Image (tube, rainbow, N blue to C red; front, side):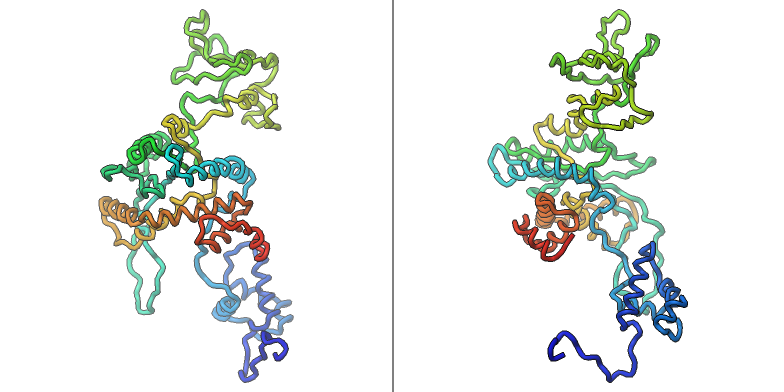
Length: 461
């Protein structure tokens, strides 16, 4: 102890010590718990392990400890029984295609937008307007608190109760998107169910986005451009009814094939003639007036003379062995790799860009970069402490009050936190490193230039 003050002497005044104070014994239990296939182990699993003859003999146990003793040992080994806090989505957060989209598409676009966000020039000002949906449940209430031993259980409602979905836009400059005079807002309360309001599909989102653009222009006029950010959900990526799509095009059509009714596909672009290309015969065609051209003819018009010798698609599910840009294994693949098909945008993006604004999609599994997610969390924390609602009107009133209590100061703090995550990914950090850096430098909007040195010093991976 005199040479090393961290090496404390053993207290010899106590008559006995606990078996768990033996480091070898505690380490053996810890290794056994790590070897279990499931993280949801029980104290009985430790009890069964200690009952094994080899374990019993190795540590000279006098008897098998009780379950209560095992629980005390687990607490002494720094375990505690409770719920695991949710952080970020890890099932796809570091997936190769998700990282590729984040690093190659989303972050370069965000870097361009961020420069215009901070420049604040009159004509080039870009303002982030982020969108998301969240569901509130009638019976969702706070369920963790200090409980006195004399407190008796109270009857509770079964299940989560009815739900109301909220779809809204918010921006750090204004908070929730509303008219300048506050008489109208972009917020929608939607009762999702087949027997209620139906389902919030892409058509409903586009109608809400159209209204959000009008509200934005009412606040900023022509002095700013909105950068609308949406989740990378399949319903948000839906294309227009007349969008280019090679997925279900027939290679050959027969004279007796009836002409399908409905919306016709828009014109493509012929790389051979450098002109627009219609995929339908003219209305004055002698044999097939207004009929869809077959893929073979469309490709031959573009200069692919051997298209008739290729199959319509590879396999039954368009599963080509090679998906490179120059692959010509089937007719579907050739069309799929054409510039006009590759540049086909979702209907939501086309709607926003037609109004001279910008639209983009957040990377999948990256809820931390969309600050409205934290806004929902703050609103639900307030919602859970409200009295239990008795009807739809009370529930809607509680939702409105909970959303309104998230003021613009909180939203700007949430936006700064998301900006730190984005800056971390731009500097090459992965999800775990970005989370560590966000906690350490929570007072900054961006991370320091020497962040990699700090990571190496702390061995965060």
